[in-house]
Length: 91
Image: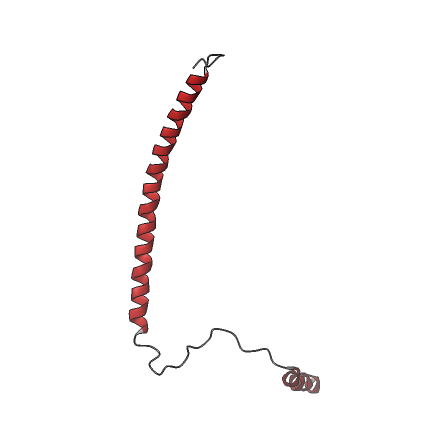
């Protein structure tokens, strides 16, 4: 489409206002979609949390702490020495 070389300030203001209206409408549409998505995600999280709490009701009856997933602590030099001595003795 051919653009005119000269455009008046009134036309610029009119076009700018039109673009702002269109952008606002577009933003509202996307915001509604995002809100719906967030609501679904929150609902899913809540149901998962409820299911977990129901499963955990039967566990830890004694009040003991849950087992940690950390691996065994690194052995000290005192514990390592006998192993090295055994290897040296075999050779």
